[in-house]
Each structure stands twice: as C-alpha cells, then as structure tokens.
Image (cartoon, rainbow, N blue to C red; front, side, top):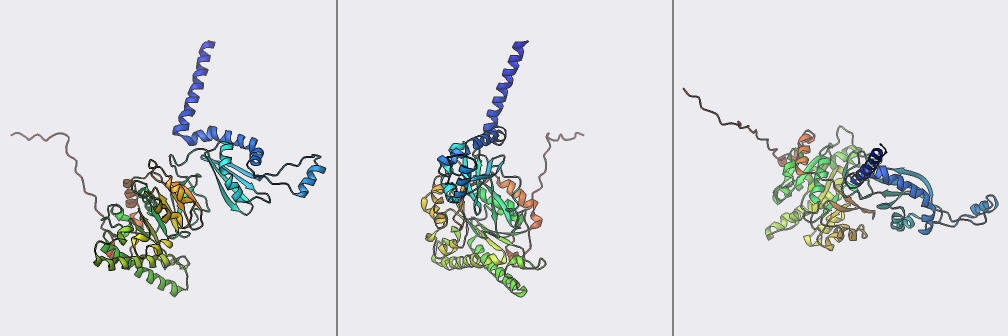
Length: 451
C-alpha cells in the first residue's frame, strides 16, 4: 500500500511540474501569477536595500537622521538611505513598485540603473516612469509580453478619459499603447513590407470604427487595402486624381468648420455645443509616397496641390476635429517639396522594422534620437513590433495584436450605422458592395421522373 501511495505522490509531483513547465511556455501569465510573482516579491523584499546600495541608488542620510541613529537608536554606524518603498502591486504581467526618492537622487539615476536592477531581481525588464516630483514607479515585467500579445481588458481611467482614445498595441511594460487624438492629433507610421504596418492600421481602424467619428480613406493602390472598409468610410479615394479632389473637399470642410467656430466664439471643436458640433474626422492615408511621386511633368501641378492641402490640414485642422494618420514605407525630403514641412506637423511617430537607417532617422531622429538604434534592431521574424515616440522625447517598444483583414471588415460592417453623412464628402462616399446570395446545391443529382 505504501508503494502505491509513493507512486501516486511521485506522479502528482511530476504532473504538477509538467503543468508548470507547460504553463511557462504556453500560458506565461498563469505561470507568472502562480510562481514568478511570489518568488519575485520575496527576492525584492529580501535584497532591496543591498541591491540599491550596490547599484549606487543610496545617499548619505541627513544630519537629523544621523543624530537620531547615533543618540536614540544607539547605533554608531549610519547606513546610507535608499529610496523609500511606498507601494508594491502585482499583476498578471509583472510588478509595479512606487518609490519615494531621497534628496540627492533623480529619476535619471534610477533609469540608468534599470538594467542592473533587472538582473538583480530576475525579471524580464524594468522600466522607470516619473509619476510626480519626488516619486518614480518601477514597472517590472516577468516575461516577454510582446512574444504573444494580449491586450489589457480595461484601460486606466487617466488613459481612457478622452472621447477619441483607441487602444492599438501593447507596450513592453505591459500597459496599452493608445492613440489619443486630442493629445496627439496627427501621426506618422513607417515600416517596410511585412513589418506589421498593415496590422497596425487594422487595429487602428477596428478601434475607430466603434467610435462616433467619420473615417476618410486615401488609398492610391486602387483601394486594395481600404476598399473592404467601405461600410464605415465616409469618403474614399483610390487614385491620385480622386485624392486631389478629396483633399480639396476636406480643406473646404475645414474652412466651413472654422466659420462655425467663429460664429459661436469657440476656439476648439469640443467647445461647441453638442447640437452644432461637427463629427470628428480621421483621414487615413495608406501610402503617402503615391501622393508625392509623379511620372510626368504634367502631374506636378496636381502633386503640389495635394501637398499644399495636406500641409494646411496638418497645420490647422486639429482645432476643427480633422486628424491625419499618414502611413508609408519611406518619408523624407527626397519625396519632394513640402514633405519635410508635413512631417514636422505629425507629432505621433510609430516606426516598424525598416530597410535602412535613414528611414528610422526620418521617423524618430528628430524627436527621440535614442530610439533610432532600437528600430534598427527589430528582428524580421517578429512582425508588428515597432518603436513609438512623440515630441516629448520619450519612446517605447510596442507590438500590435494579430488581427485579420476579415475581422476588420466584419467590424466595419457591424458598426456601419455609425458612419456619418457629410454633404461635402458625399461625392466620394464609397459604394458598399452587396453580399451575393449563394444558393446551396443539392447533395445528390436529381433523378428525372419516369412516365
């Protein structure tokens, strides 16, 4: 009987170990919650003071503290003071620690030591976020969250407070990367073929389709990318000639909205009363190079006109609720006159894997020079990984979840009733294809009746 119980105990232990090994590979969130998080918290609590000391994140105590230690605590040696731990929170992806910095330390000191902290505590990564003066937050991840992207179920209140917030990707610290058009009105997305740029667009369009906004598509590749989203598009241009006319109509719509703002004494779209407030518009340009490049001299006038309209929209349209999403493989001064001026107005930058360093410099070199190296190290076997930056100089690695074109088209059909009707853009409203009725054929051939 004892042999049977021993066998059962050994089998149970092996099954548990095998289950944990399977969870570590196939379900890292489960493994981290069951094993990784408790071990990391114990290691953090046991080695915090010594780790901070060897990493150079301690300062000499104040005179009052030294006096109290020597005369009240009766200890002759006064230890250096590390940052004070205010809060420790665990999650399914990692752990977050709020630190109160002592006098003499700044967030840059903790950021410089983040790689050493990562190895000391045995976590996958450590990111330092400056939350408020005197406080920083260590965002630790227990595993590579970008290997298998799973978006958070809920967004923090501070992130999801705006009416035009779209979660698009996952950051490497486990938080959601969102496109907030009130904070960052215009964006530029760059990436080579098979880099995941189209996947980023699908997630963006699928998120925008659920919001009360108008979508305007410019896809000069005969609409191969955006024609499927026709039920949710208020306008679509599939040739350079159509794009020129559509951009001119958008400029006219912008000027009409400025008249509305002036009549009501408002300086922004969101200051208008709800009854007269126009619907926000997001202009999605699939391949911007097709608007700049010309094959004949006679097309240069059309190109200059389109570029002028794009620059005017980028400079002024934010106040009237018209936002630009520019995508392309390359974008720089070699495209022609007005390209650099347009790029300067595109605050949000997302750069996927590129074929040359110059493209990374064009996307991020002018706002976050440190991120250029991160772009050039994106491996080709991880499509969807990108580097996102903004004009503040901050940047982070992100990855979009996998989303098929069929799912995006289904989302556009589901929320087609939200498509606003704009008289100025009515001539460019795409024709929604009707689903053909398929007839089922009988499984067996009919047998003719005999007389």
